[in-house]
Image (cartoon, rainbow, N blue to C red; front, side, top):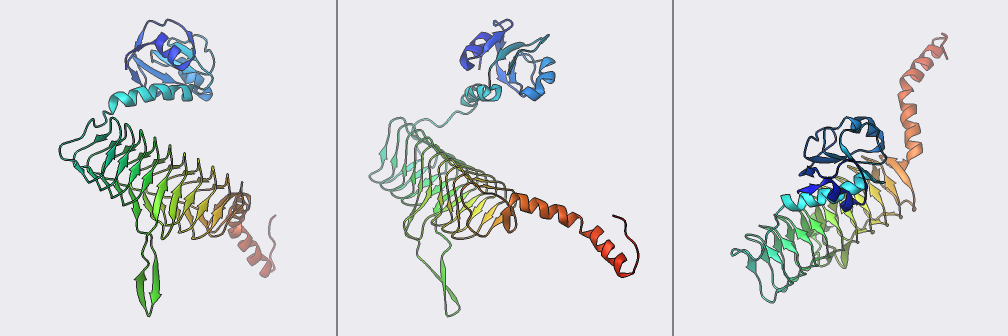
Length: 338
């Protein structure tokens, strides 16, 4: 990335204060930035920004006596994303073309400028949209479909008949469409329930490393548009995740669980089978959710309850030792202090 400060200012739609001829070549954090770097400062970091050694700093308001060039923009971090995207594009060279070792089944349809990395495998009847990239060692089973401009990183397995939308990113190590965990107990034996459904993933979804999304027993496991799933999360069979929901690391959903739109599951949350969380629900970290909750609920704990109730109980628990000593003293006929 080689841009003048003036070019950076035009790119992010900011107001330039200071000379615009200097070149920036890198993005950096505020504390680490030096000459040749461009960085940003939130409002609470303006004092540190004034002493920054960077060539240019994106700021929410003008700073007096600042050595670096200032680019004033309403939301510096959001504007900085444009520069991060440029840096990412330069750092990450996606595979181009069809590698000689890729395996392509019968009746496969490839869109314009599709790329297949080394040892990528496409089963019979797969369909890939324009500019989609399949990284090395990833496997798509028969009759999978992936939309345009999507990225499937290395060592991803899409089982048969999985569909993935456009502009979706699936990171390394994911398994999409494995069998759901379905068994019947018959005379002391676990009898497997055949899993004949599929998985449907929408547009603009991102799934982090080492996640698992099970296929439905029947019908579909569905991840709607705009959903973001962090690393090491598990989505069981027949789940549905509403649009623009976010699941942070180690989130786990039991079978047939339904999330509405814009739901947030914080890290290490577990949801039991068959429950529903309405639109806009927020579940605090480490919670175990054992029943359904209506739209807009904010819950925490194991089992989860209203967040304010859980916090009140935490405070009360911290007082138990003192209450115990007070009761002991009362039983002995002594006095206690308030």
